[in-house]
Length: 448
Ligand code: PMP
Image 1 (cartoon, protein in one colour):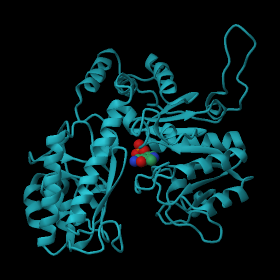
Image 2 (cartoon, helix red, strand yellow):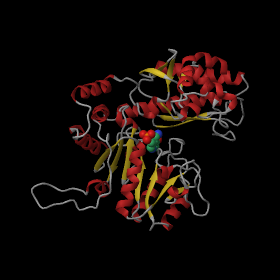
Image 3 (cartoon, protein in one colour):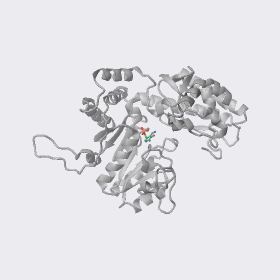
Image 4 (cartoon, protein in one colour):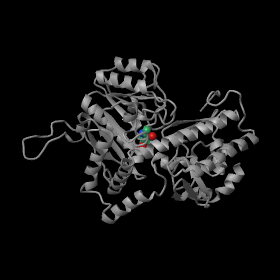
């Protein structure tokens, strides 16, 4: 496999090697180990279309990465491209605010039920601001996040380990020192003890931050737990923050809030709503969003901003191209009244069910777990070679392994994709890498 991939990805490897000394890219060393060194690189592609990406060697891959979930309709989708092109003719400058930003805030409010909306550039930035707003309004300084979640790269969230005594997140990432984690409680998701902990520390906790369904564990969809979190936070003046950077505008137009029937205080969005352009959104109740600008006032009377605002800003925060693209995404979703999402989610569920049946029938200790149009392979141990075998067979999954389908993955593409996954499993079995096991999918020991 190593030699075959090296031949197939010859130009990607040459490119990676040529620029390594100057281009610092962690993905080019992701999962590095010495034995696999020859196939450690990230794919370099200069063309994308529908469900496909094309690498420098002109190989075609069925894309399961889909812009890390930012491309909902498929690559190079004409209506989005045209909306961006149209705006490009008008202006792509920042400085004075684009009229599209106000319009988009109103559309998002209509679609999701949030009262107010603020724009940033990435999910990371949105999460960072959401926590700041919660602290500013509650006048408390700690927050809770949960094991297994990914919220981007804001320092206070970069840990996977908890101190067993204090329950504070522990320093594990070089450069993210303990002092920056000393207001971050990292608790077990779905656990009753976590609810107890929150109640017991209510006077110091400003916010509970959660990905309602964690992208790394899409099978866990804790409807009741989210309701309990809502109750506990509401009773104790703690902001409930839903990080919907992945689930927003995906599971439904109204995201997880609509799907689970739980209204958060603050919601973060990104990815899908940007139509492939960089965006991060903080939205939610006026009580919290008012900490951005002091709250509502009007001309012609004696009203003034009454809330003490914190500080938020950013050069590219309302970039006209991202605003135009996002408006088009919403327009398309609204026009279909959510049907595009429902159909895509159903297609993904059926696709995953067929794969799981295949794994079961063949006693492969593999499974796929799904939520909306997101799915992940569960593999025994860390069977990363699966992804390399898939790459060899023309399926692209990025290093973080979250997979997404789009409407561009039509029935014939999906049939091809399934065949490629089957072939990959058989080839891994032939190489002695994948072993049949009576334990069955999802029950294998040491699952990733
Ligand atoms: N929150 C969640 C749930 C995410 O999945 C991500 C990114 N995958 C982020 C936040 C960070 O978003 P970004 O990469 O745009 O900073």
